[in-house]
Amino acid sequence: MSKVPARPHAIEKPAPSRGTRWLVLIIIGVACYGGYYAFDYIGPLAPLLSRQLHFSNTDIGLLQAVYSLPNIVAMLVCGVIIDRLGTRKSLSIFAVLIFIGLMVTALTPRLGIMVLGRLFVGSGGEALALTANVGVARWFWHDELSLAYGLRGSAARLGSLSAQTSPAWATHAYTYWRWPLLLGVAFGALCLLGTALYWLIDTRGERKFSLGHSARTTKIPFREIFRFNRSFWLIAALCFTFYGCIFPFETFGQKFLIQARNLSPQSAALLIGMEPFFSLVGMPIFGLLVDRYARRSLLMMFGSLLIVPVFPMLAFTNIDPVIPLAMMGVAFALVPAVMWPALVYVVEKSRLGLANGMLDSVQQLGLVVINLLIGWANDHWLASAQNAAGYRPGLCMFTAVAVLAVIIAFALWRIERGPSAHGLETITTGM
Image 1: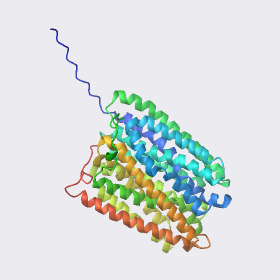
Image 2 (image 1 turned 30 degrees about the vertical axis):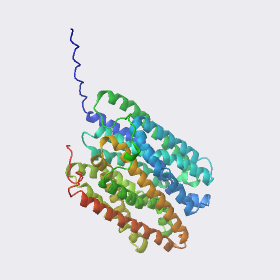
Image 3 (image 1 turned 180 degrees about the vertical axis):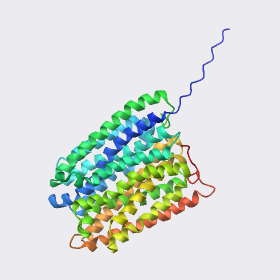
Image 4 (image 1 turned 90 degrees about the horizontal axis):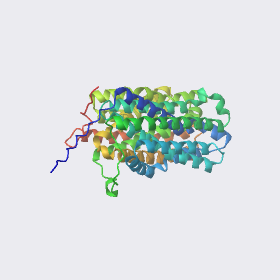
């Protein structure tokens, strides 16, 4: 009887080369740059919408909140989609949604149609950011993970910075409400370009290299969707409170600085742009430090503590707003640089898409609630250039949320120093 020849052992694929990994990161960054511009361009447009289209603070809050509204549930679905379809197909689908939404938003001055467009942008924008996180983990899980997340975040913040400062560098566009929206469409096209390039290089890389997250064919039982540990849920609660202070403030920050601090639109745009600028510069630095020295939960607590005094300083003092906004900018660089890569250590790799989706769902819930709450507060207390004190109740609400973020971060730090720790305080990666 003849023997069946033994199968040769499968050849183990090498880790991606450093040059290829960084090329992938640049391409992901291009997609995120366009996507985050689409998220942040409503805040700078708010004074123009009030003046030319007579939108109220509640209307403007709705335009920003509706970006997040579908994502409270959709991010869970997106996490499952990423785990089932993989990053290439997911990025492409979500970039197309962003582009369609940007076009719809620019069609008409009718609030209902603009809200519909923002729904599309939100459905694609947060999902694209979520997929980008998984894509970074897919290529960098061998090494330099936090640094890569930080640089991915820098690209996103550059998109936010471009949007927040657009009244300064695209002054002529801000003479008519539709022109800034058409500028957003151009950035949406850039997002599409980035996702197309990622498809090409990831397809080639999958054949040559050992990559992290891959599409899975097995279904995830419903009971597994919410099965995460305490550290994960505390990170999710911190995500709710921390981002609930940052992005809703950006929605109304330029109006506040113009009306309560008597700044020009260009100066207000540059000041609010400090937040994404600090994040752009600081996230890679903090990511590098975390890769080398860990202390992730301690750093999240410190970053949360930084934003507590920001809102009282703006509401009740005459301190130059550069100081509190610089503090917020440092916090905005530190906490996200640590928070998102921390998921890699507290959840299984096969559930990374779902975990990112859950975290983003919680974040979006916070943005919906707090955007609507602050918009209502500013209208209820008649915040305006004639009544600058009307902004104080909303700023006090921000302060309360910031204090809650510190308490949550402290609880996470306590757990990660005990027997149930997942290595957030101790795991370092080689450089």
